[in-house]
Image (cartoon, rainbow, N blue to C red):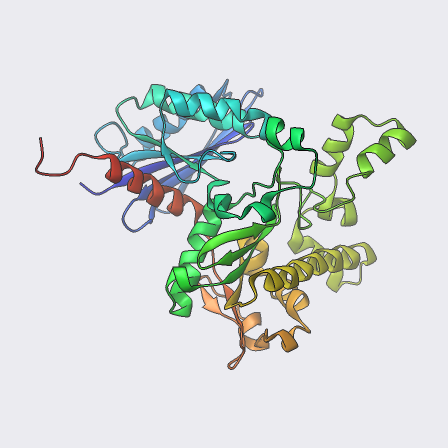
Length: 405
């Protein structure tokens, strides 16, 4: 039987799912359940080029997953105990405990719950998704794939904050990093494109979307990353500020009487491109910039400058760099951003080819000039496919050897 994996991504009020061929990573069907717990929810199920949409109230995550299963029953393809090799779950925060994907059991559930203080916006929903899937597919192996796992190879000097020992020891205050599933896929794909072994590849990878981060990769392993304890640190994002002076919280509290919750909400939901230009869609920022909109021009420049700073910093951290890699919606589709972030870095051996950079294509490709000492790549990510691949690897590793019994 062909390996098939149901990949689940449970958010605060949504459930996204994909059914993938575990060998090729090709999607057989995908969908989402939005507005969970609200008066009216929306189920979208896409299969064989057809998209089916249904509006209905979805009470909770169990109702959401049951609705998705019903969509498979109505529109195909069939899923169930006998047709799934595994269910793969995206879990945002694995702390310093999980450095690789893991089979879901009671101990894992307890550990993910213990880690909720590190990701209060994400881990509770992820945890509920794990529990619901265990109830609905009790005989199918369930595998948790952690966004933070890829970065557990960072050296101590890179992940340690200069804060009191009690914060670090008792409250787990350190850099963790995120987007790890994307980085795992893109690192492997970039090495293939360069014709190098993964363990012989040094990269600066830029995952640029509504959430954005940068990672320095030495010999295929993360050695530094821009996001920290939370997904707020680092690059400018759609609605998140990225790097800022940590004293801003205290200043706003003293000057405005703002609470920690108010300031956190503003930094997560009202900052970034939205705070600078009034919109969080980079495409709209680019269009408005081209039309001469001053706020959009500033937003673009701040965004590109922050990317450029991290490229330079991580080049210095690595010492030797084989490629700068762009991925994510912005990284893949914005030649203007790539040109602005890398323009003027020719003395560092980074030279874009304008024609290659401007050409749009759906596949992984080189956009640097011939003779550039450092290649520049555009690599579309595939987080769902990577979750499926890792889930199958866990199931295969734990399966009894054939011929023994």
